[in-house]
Image (cartoon, rainbow, N blue to C red; front, side, top):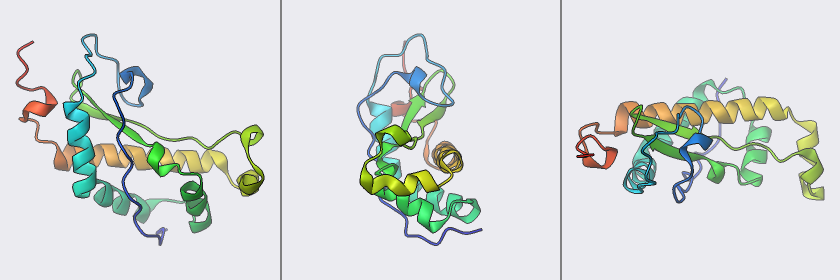
Length: 152
């Protein structure tokens, strides 16, 4: 099933978070909160990694257009976050979740009619796909911003 929607703008990578908060990342003991890898990841997303990954994901997702419109309406795309984990030399991610039904406004009533768990699973799969595209096609593992020449 192909999701026939335009590729949205990539998410904004924010200031460093605690790496233990990300899926697929073990918190490194020597984490310093360095922003260079985050800035490089944000640049890769803008330069095409997001579009490449989104295109790959939409070819295999089970999410429908109405569900995806809900994701856009709730601003969930910008809630994705990605993090370079120097200990494992991989990209971790945090996928957004849907708001709980108790926090919905009247304009979000359609959320009660959708498969929230299914949408969250598909958003998680999008995060995983973006992470893999970044790791396999964009990150130069010999680059300084990813810590391979760090003298620590």
